[in-house]
Image 1: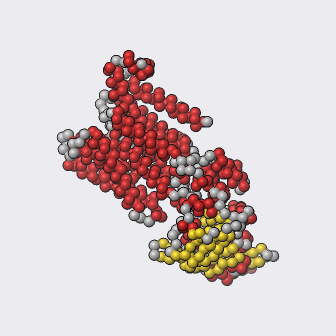
Image 2: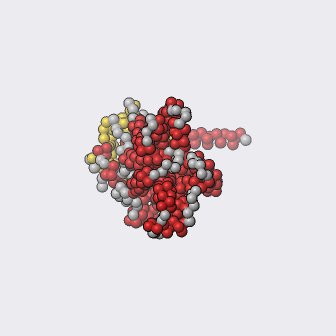
Image 3: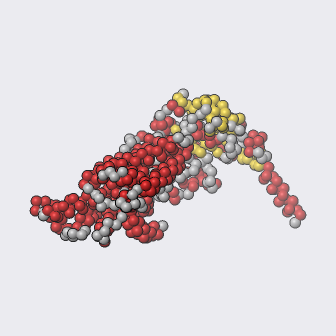
Length: 326
Length: 270
């Protein structure tokens, strides 16, 4: 019952945050005005409509879904790798996706291709890491996976540097650099819907298998002895988190910190109920990134890179929680 | 009643053979202890019996069926495993740890249902642990943790439980508690297989005992027949004698005598 109450509280928080975020910006709108416009779209003037539905809503949705995706992936990875310092990028999804985007920008391809390239190279990078690790002995598969991930990360980071090095310093290089810092300024409805679908599908699957994921945090032999095959579930989990992370990077660039620290903090709140911890991570991650993005829109008319803000605003905030809870 | 049989089993890592041509069997309701000095193949044997490793040759079978050919779920229905070292990635409550014993019986997308938690509670109650149900598993003492994992094995509802050194790192009181539980479970018809560094425990439980030396099985019989001063001295590389005090047996290393003599001498000279 308490869990239902908590879910309702989160739902309320999401609605309130979305309304607030819709009203904040260079052209402020009163929340009441927004609600009136939503109930009765016919009476809305055209400017308000464009601001609400073409500019702000896609961006708000993207912020929420990207935050949720990163935080969920982080929560799941930290569990199956039995390591609280693991982030969704551990197997190379972020650096792979970032490389794809950088390459697409270098080649002068359009927005859709940037997203597409980025998504595919993210998936590819993790595939390389998983294949590499499967060549080793079964005994230390988890460790091998993380090491292969580090290798793939380093490799793609070097490729990114290479792309930057050959990029035209007058226009292509700054575009790549800004893209990599993370931004939601280019949000469009189709991107947000894509992100939403990925979060919904992968999130549902991960949530359904939450008991198995919790079991994956035990020893390898122990899991087998309980009668389930850890390889199957680990594979499904890695596919889902990779889809989530690559999709997130492909529409927003590299936004660090959320996938590492949000699940970490959530675990301090909810130490021993995995199911609650999982969906709390989803909502907290989503709300956190929405908050940061709204702040970034509110404080400056310039587009401030999100990757920078998440850590600058996040660090002291989370430091407080860490100290308080430990 | 079911029978687990180890036949001509050889196994190891890479191309290094650790255990060679092992043969013995155990039935549900019996206790079997595996004794052997460090590095003699106890762990390798136990891992093969649990189906974690692929043997080089030979088989481990339950009711005549090779456990390597069973699917994981079937095997988990026959055999539960209680690990020694236990690290988890997330914190579990005791009840959540115990209810994991039911996971193979539930569907892919299931979470533990009321019925599963009732099973978990029953196991906890059987071992007198119900008061710990809401506690954080990680915060329990070593002895309590071991008992909780045994409760999980009970929840798995198997005919055989394999335990990897279940009393290591426990104080004496907890050691006895675990031994008592194992003895009670065997009375209820569960087969108990234990790797151990304590020959005395085998004697106290009057268990079937397998002694491994250099990777081969050198003795296999009731503890009172197998565990002699000669065998132990040879096995552990230090002189040990087995004393019989009105039928209750205990092991006494020569060291005890030496120390006694030393204290006697210093006492006299003082």
